[in-house]
Length: 387
Image (cartoon, rainbow, N blue to C red):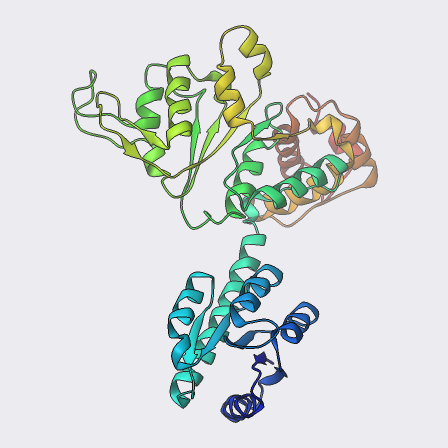
């Protein structure tokens, strides 16, 4: 049932507002506060779906109530109630986060439409937050080890910001999963996340790939082409294996981070971009810096938040969960019935030296699903999981 709070110092107006709203929908629970101080205490203690708040009140005026309430419960829509002389102030409260304002005496249709719209907006805001917490199963991060729990905690704190993140760790540990979690839980999740594997692109083409080029800028440039930074505008660009990027490309990336501008290869025209940068590498960038292969100033620009993804050998307690996750996922993909793993099979898998990390474990589980018995045993593991 929607819960509505009316903060108004005039008892007669409170009664009128409550009567109109309650008669509109019997499921509405309408509560009253006679001044701003009481209203703020109620907002702290209870969960309201909508607040109607007068502007001119003793003890604490409506503008102060709005500012305090938005800090306590930012998702609550707040509708300001304004007298004739308060209209300018009412308009200004919209800049402070008010959902809308209604004038005294309230027009019946205007009031009810505002209430309906505000309640619908609250529902959408809550649902949007819930969806952002739910990451696509394609990029689910499986594990309850201390290391993985720590990474999940960092993601929860960092995802909603625009802070740049550098993800480090050996090949196959799931650095790209961390990047996807950061994007999907962010306010940029509706915009694209563009992935660039810096190690897979020839050094002579990496600048064109990242920043685009103009026609005739080099052999084969037959037409103007936008780069990955432009494609990611408003969203996130994930620079995987950034330790393999050429120094000249690093210089351009540094400029993009400093100025939020890029220029296409062969052009001197600046293009403004709004992109969050997440980078990953399996290299020790401090060693690369000392060898002159990576720019120290770029490193410090990228590593605002540093996330280290552990090797699978360092989180063996997660192997049972990972095996179960992959077994179900692979059975679905292959159109096969699900198979379970015996405790002895799991124990044996926990003893392996996983040099290929999560990627290697997935391949082994797939092999065992295809070749093993209905209940995968330790003998199956010995036969089909040997290296």
